[in-house]
Length: 299
Figure 1: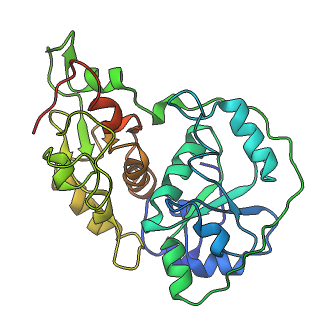
Figure 2: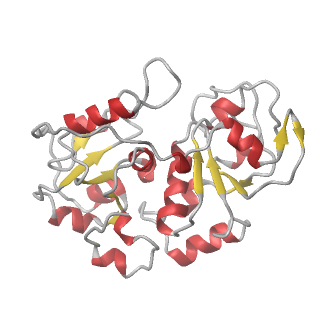
């Protein structure tokens, strides 16, 4: 990672990469720092317009990060255009925050990291903590000078595709031919994992024809990694959470959920906060796996 200023409040916690996280206090102290771009990315894409951190720009996961035709991300050229439009250079430290325990902020973080952007952080506690502390909000949309962001080369080591997962769990030609290579983590709710739901509770049950989980996956719901106020748990608590389920740093790990956003949050915890060296996000997740003909499913 690029050497970044470390928030001393985060440094004392003992995370593997403390530069990946900053506190609300740190953000408040750096609102006028021209080397930093604060980015809000929410599940509820209308929240930004209701009020946001002064100087923050918006990244809409529906329209900014997704290809309008192909079920995939935008490509490197579109990513470069997005960053140029937001006034971001390769040296700009991008600080993400959002609603719902930062889950879509973590997705945007993972995508920026996948696209090769180096200086990245997440604001611990997200929008909920900022608001709870009574910090300033505004409806003013900032405008920054356009930059000329170079077209990046994506980092394939951070992303898994369906065939990668099949090989990972030891399947070839619809048959199990080998033992799993590492740890597979299903970060969805227990009901989704058991095949009783196709989405989280209280959400429309849509997106897949079959319910269940990928064979061999451990179920560790993503939100277990955060405290009540939305901040991340301590390294000791996180290690206990994952290692107790056999998800240890010596193993290659693949994480998945329904569409890749909750698993991005778990990827952030494992790869950035705990320093696991080999963690990939299967962003196709259950909306792909639960609709593919012939792939193995357990319940």
